[in-house]
Image (cartoon, rainbow, N blue to C red; front, side, top):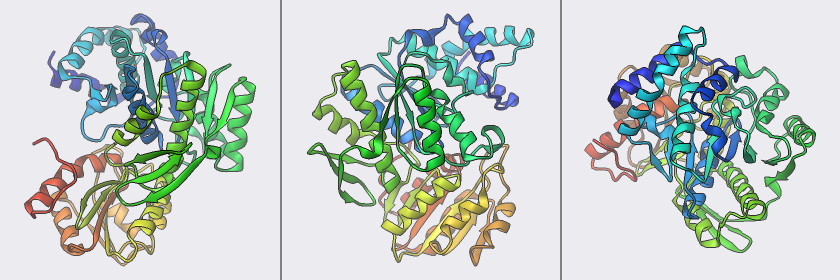
Length: 439
């Protein structure tokens, strides 16, 4: 089958939704020869910050000369972002070949009453590709939770990294912070190493208890010696053991993610003899980037795209708006899914933005533009539910002029849809964009 046919086969498995548990994927992987057993991992779980932390770690490892796999979820621009080696997405022909080779196994399992979900299939495909490609190490981001997440079939984890822990996916992970922390901490492996940034008493207690029970060396990223030198809307500069570093992830929350990445890399270097030098650390971090993580698209007007979709993410976004855009007129283009805490997310933006334009992400779980607008009017005087994405972008740009700011948030699915449209719209207006897109 070709790439489009392969993608259609993968997407057809979305019908079965998300079902936590490891039995199904373990049976599938066994039939594939257990490729995950041939690999070693940095495993990353958390509510927010997984993607940025994963990208920083994998970029440094690549710069250090290691064949580095990266597994992230969800994608923003291209499905193939989910699985990368040395910063390059799996090519279309290779993905089609892997689906052609493995999909008959999916059908056989289905005939036996074992239904493999989309995420389970993608995870297993990635393991197979990484193993066949002889990756030295894989930076593995969980999909949802950790304990029962499909990625948690791996055993050879050199470092487990736990990022921020907050309320999200409560229907599956639990309603309390303690329950959610137990799920996130489920990736911690016996007699291994864990990196964690302390954040609140409940989560801190859960993670330290799990790490102690599993005889882990628990490293607290928040005590890492990091001197922040400069923070702008384009970059953050700091010193780490007197070594100047620059990252292009913006926002105070990204400093926490940087601490986590540096702590994990320290363990790889000191305990597992990874050849990470000052030069590869500096260049790797400087080259690390991810779309839709407070991504600056244009400076005049300011256009920011952020995948913030839960209260914790919105809190980080609001802090960034206060820090980088004080006094600016801000119009927010927002779309959210039904299972997200829209009211709390909107509350974080109260008093920071002038107007809200609501749209509908292309997702079966979408919240309608009118539903979101009905919630938004409790916080903002000017709310405009709109259907046409391009018209929404034009309206927002017209409202802010050259000196204001347009902020896209609420959903990575929405960010994926709007990102290319925004770039095209800005170019038509003869505005200088900081990124380009494939036409």
